[in-house]
Image (tube, rainbow, N blue to C red; front, side, top):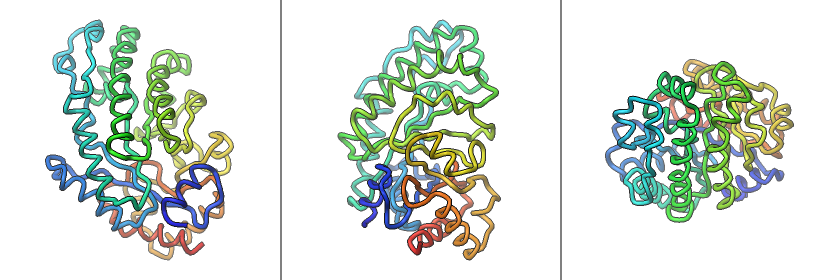
Length: 318
C-alpha cells in the first residue's frame, strides 16, 4: 500500500499493511504573513516527519473577524451578527492558502483541514470569560451567532474540499469539558450548530475526522458527542479513554491517537529505542484495523520533528 491507499483503508476500518501515523504541530507565527512560506512549512513538515497523511493548519485564521465582535458590549447585540460571505478574506484566504499546501503535497497523501466548531470560532475572538458570561445571560443570542458562523463555515468547508483540493476536514469539537456545561445545556446551546457544519462536511466527503479536543487539560463529557459521526475520531487518550479497544467500542469507528502531546511527556524525552517499543505496544493494542497512531492534540514547538519520524518508521516495521 502507498500512503493514500493505507489511509483510505484505515478510514474505512479495513485492514492495513502498516498502521498509519499522523501527528502535527502548529505553523510558527513568522510564516503566517506569507502564504508561500506557510505552504512550504507544511510541506516540509510532511517530508521531515514522513507521516502517512497531513492535518493542515488554520493558523492566523482562528479568531472570527466579524466587526461586531470588536466592540461587543451587550449579549443581545449578537443578534446583529451578519455572515462574512464567500468573498471575505477570512474565507477566501484559507481556501487559497490550502490550495497551495495541497499542490505542494503533490498528491502523495490525504490531507484534512482544521475547522473549529462555531462556538469555538466565537470564543477565539471574544475569549472564554465573555463567551461563558454571554451564553448564560442569553443563550438564544449566542445560538444565533453560532448559526450565522455555521453558515460561513459551510462555505469554507465547501471551498476547502472542492476548490482547494483537501480530502476532508479535521473538525475540532470543543467546549465539552465536564466542568463547563451540563449535558442538557450542551445539547441545547452547542450541538445544533456543531452538527450543521459536520453533517454538511459529511455530505461532501467521507474523509472527515472529528477531534475530541481536550486542550484545556480537563476530561470531556463524552456522551454529548455520541451523535457526532465521521469516519475517524481523534480522541484524547491521556484525558478521556486510555484503553484503545474501549475507545473503538465507544466511538464505533476508526480511532486516532496514542501519544501524549503535552510538553515534557514521553515522546519529547524518550530514547529512539523506547519510542519504537511504545509504538509497537500501541499497535499491538490497537491492531491493524480501525486504528491510526497519533497524539492527543497538537505537539508543541519544542518537539523535534525527527521524533515523529521515529514513530512513522517504527510503525512500518510491524
